[in-house]
Length: 439
Image 1 (cartoon, rainbow, N blue to C red):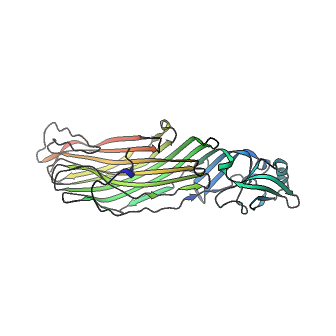
Image 2: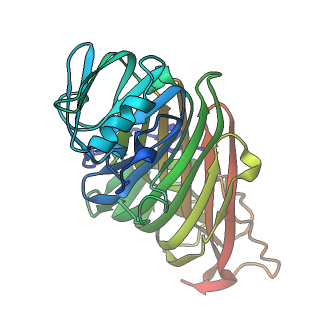
Image 3: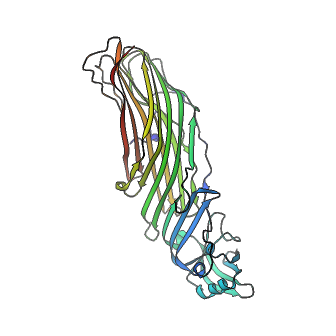
């Protein structure tokens, strides 16, 4: 696979810099999903569930299940708590309900207890639960207040096993929430020399992405047992290219990669960080045996491409729905052999960080649409390009014309850093069978 970052310009050229907008990350904050109260919420448990959401955007949400090293109370689950106040070594909890207050006294151990604070008082940052390891408890029956002597800690230190699903249907309705468009923001020369000029005359690229996934992480053994991404992607690409050659010329790739566009990431403070970035690229493969003008256009659209990417086991990764629609055209002005293949590609890179670096891995998806156009008058010159089409004109040359063939190719490659890379989808579709075209 050829990653976009590795594409190089093969001739000196002056190109403008095009920067995409950098959107702020969705920092997910804890939300209370339980609406009941009583002993189920008050009783400590080794197994806890936490819920997170990005403001009013239900499309960015996460569900965290954790197996704790000690019995744990999640204050989000106790609706009768009126206030929570913390100092450097205490957590003070006041109840509205005498029943819940008394149940807490009877069920909470004065040691071997973890308290996860909610957003009451000053016990946590704006977007995280406070994690406190209790060493002793004191009670004030008059005010129905429990004061815990406690040391602040973290889920990284206190969880034995962690399971996170983000943008899951169990938590939020699925919705495409990452959208990037690059339309008519750049056109210009890919190369401009005395013998050859290749110009990109029109660029219209856009993509929308719905990203979800999950991770199961054994914190004690620092091992991920499950790590996957699910993506629903729509792509639109329109590229128009012209070439003017004064002599024979052959090259593999001339391309321009638009600077990486950082799209909305999201973060659960101290637990999970997802950092996507999106890169667009346009370019051509080109070769010619003499002086001529050549033009080519490619328009491709993918309405609904779906990927399941298992970052631990490539054999379970899969794709579906990549049904491209496309249009293309090409012209040649003189009796020469030529090939001009415009392409557009997009790469989505995703960095995943679990528990502040205990697990750090990245994955990427590259989708590339290309029109392969080959013009042949003599049929005697083999043009050297990456995806060339071999023309077999057994009937000889065309009088006052040229043989022409054109194919549409589309492929989807995936990679996981240091683990694997492979093609998940690839299709070649004929646009024009080999035929004689008059000049």
